[in-house]
Amino acid sequence: MAVSHYRDLLVWQKAMDLAEQCYGATRTYPNEEKFGLVSQIRRAAVSVAANIAEGHGRFHTKEFLNHLSMARGSLMEVETLLMVSLRVSLLNQEVCDRLLAVSAEVSRMLSGLRKALEAKLP
Image 1 (cartoon, one colour):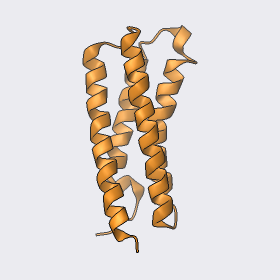
Image 2 (cartoon, one colour):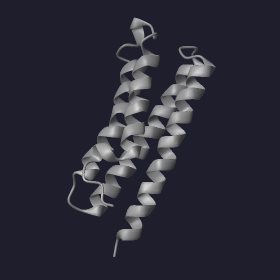
Image 3 (cartoon, helix red, strand yellow):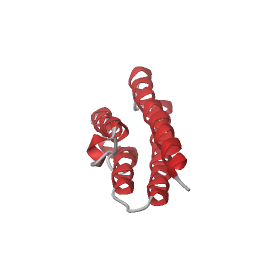
């Protein structure tokens, strides 16, 4: 069954969950980080879902694959920024672990979608 809209993609839905959770987790960061880690984490998290959506809207599978690659890169950026936040005591271990678990799930889902799309290429 073909997916008619990017909102039907489970990986997009999970990426949206991650973005929402990152917004929640960064609400407690100090004001001095508003334009630093807070902004970077939020932009990178939103970028994951946005790249999935944009790629789905493209006309060619190779373009979709390229956007999935960018989504994965943004996901790795989110993970790194969360780990920096943990190291500088802006995030506690429990919250960081929870967010990294969601990120790992998104990563697995991106890999699965990528493999399925690559199998469709000539």
